[in-house]
Length: 401
Ligand SMILES: Cc1cc2nc3c(=O)[nH]c(=O)nc-3n(C[C@H](O)[C@H](O)[C@H](O)COP(=O)(O)O)c2cc1C
Image (cartoon, rainbow, N blue to C red):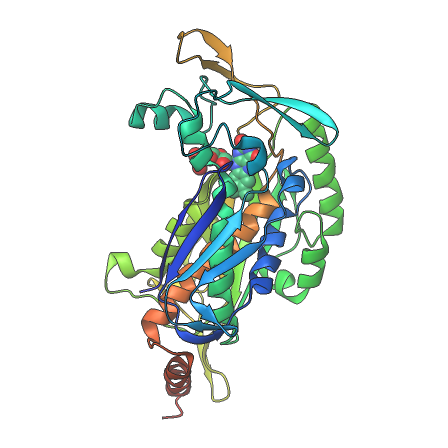
């Protein structure tokens, strides 16, 4: 079974991940993974961190002569900021560990707490210190941070390489920021993907993008933050991936879990999602048709390509709601865990809006879940064996044998 584990703290030396279960013979390069890492770092409304980190992956194992070996693939992404954090984040006990560090960035000297005693609202901080009995909130926030999603994107890039070699496409676009809505839908996104990629906000609707930028500027001025909605789309997926037979093999459930596991994602919809609860069955379900050239297909795609816990051969359409970034430059109230006194939450360098980046992380998680479902269906240790099974299945469902 395809799986991965990742490790690393936001200001630690590096982030690492191991992927197991990729077949042998897949062409893979660090360059391809780096392209995806760069996409995660773009987006209007990001904080200073994105200027510091230009993520680059190092492939440590599992690939030789540009091809996967079928063995575990180990990837590493260095944290460029590590130099400044060595004393605070060292694995060894440092006798003169500073309470505060000064970091020079963008020509300004900033002061950051080495030890954090005030849990920040909207973060893992309070639950984390209570759970692990930590006296320093940094022990929680360093790992809970969305910096971890860099490795998810690297894993997703590997999964995507596999899926793309079978003609499967993965896209995303930002549909809403705050209360501004894009008119772009899933089909527009696939047809005009270059415009989405070129957009500061991964938004294909230029007019909406201009308004979104203004909303972000306004939120920043007010010391506030914004969330939004993004869509992840997958094309050319064969029907029958996943299963109706067991709750834990249902693809809809697996996709929702993977997307909900992304920091700050608070809702996931499939196809018409919540809107379908408010209308009649005749307006919700998709008729079925058959043509010799095409095989079976649906007359509409309100289900978002998933029925009965399986792909149904139509475009997969998933929508995620991201809450506004919890770190606020006008912070909320909290409590100092040392003194139990009321304090204002500390402010670390933070994004104002990270919906475009979250969309790229969403693509990565969907790619991983789909690659796993794909390899469950067309199993084999090398690409050639998988291709044979895939071809046989594609021909059978078109009625060719
Ligand atoms: C790509 C991405 C970037 C994020 N950047 C920040 C950030 O700069 N500052 C911040 O406070 N939260 C940021 N978040 C959100 C927090 O990581 C998240 O809200 C927090 O870990 C608590 O998790 P929860 O919201 O899922 O409960 C980001 C999330 C994502 C997906």
